[in-house]
Length: 456
Ligand code: UD1
Ligand code: MG
Image (cartoon, rainbow, N blue to C red; front, side, top):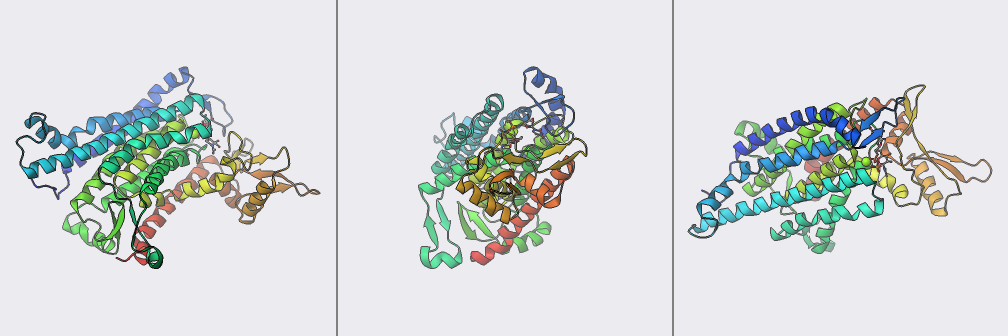
């Protein structure tokens, strides 16, 4: 058997597709079937933007996470059967009686298996954290460190794999920094922050039917599209990809290298790994979205936000495309930066920042945060700046000039400010269009503009 098999293990990829269809069907049937069980366990919430107050089963992301992780476990034999078979044939001792090439190949497989298992561990921790958050409403400052800890297995395996911590400096800055800079431990800090960001950023862009799951779905589809560019396609498909790949800069080992998109089989392997995690995620998300779509009959809870966020950071880190991945989070980055004054306590943050619902017209308009006491100098400065940028709208006292009210600092309220009141379904459609536009921009930047700042 050659050391690195250049053709992708298609049976595993077909199995992954099959598992994804199964994931879709399982979510489609299990989510409504388990709804009453969730309500009985007091896992329920009221839809804040409706006239009725029937209890809706909450944190059904747990159903999705369970289906997803179980299927990922059942999938293990498909890509790793050669590992298992050779281990068995060598009597459990991987080195005895093997030629050098076979032994190297076996080590390679075992390394891939440890990457896979550590990823599962991080996903399980994210699920647990999300579910605990749903049940206990963990405080912000307490839940931030947990994804950091959950990412340790990932980082250890990255380290053991000889993970690269160099970054390539863009052309204009090379005079100062040189071509390559080793970020060393800082690179690990960056990667653990990535998992914290990915898990929380989806959770704070939430509150309208379908918002959380549609973000996850579009990001997963974008990652899949990006992975497909790296597979060794038959010659007929290659021509357009070749044009794209030629001017592309490909990340290898965490650094940017010039080359064609479908270069080495190592690279193909990493993107296959990413596909194995993303395909079933699309399946569960689609199945769940059917029930979470306006008017929602199931809520995702924090569990879904955390497990999907962790899945993205897992593939971004392990398949070495974390910078490309961040480009797919443009709406989340915007929402996070806009939210910072409220997240860090400069501006008061109410428990819910979802838009305000008008039962008369069925339309949503921006919700507001009230200042019971005059805002601090910093808060006034920040809010006036944001108001000048038309990111918020203020109500000021006619005589003292103190700020009395400001619209909550979220992207959803920003849409309503700029586009006017609209109904909930239209607002989630606007969010989906923004996410898709963000991904199109991401592909343009990644494959079109990267050539301008990096040499190809
Ligand atoms: C985050 C947001 C909060 C937002 C909330 C809505 C921050 C810092 N926190 O808090 O502002 O209000 O998400 O999810 O930005 N709900 C609906 N319709 C939906 C989804 C949820 O009405 O489509 C309501 C339900 O009452 C549900 C509750 O939101 O029970 C869930 O809120 P939760 O996920 O616990 O809020 P956080 O994630 O803490
Ligand atoms: Mg939430």
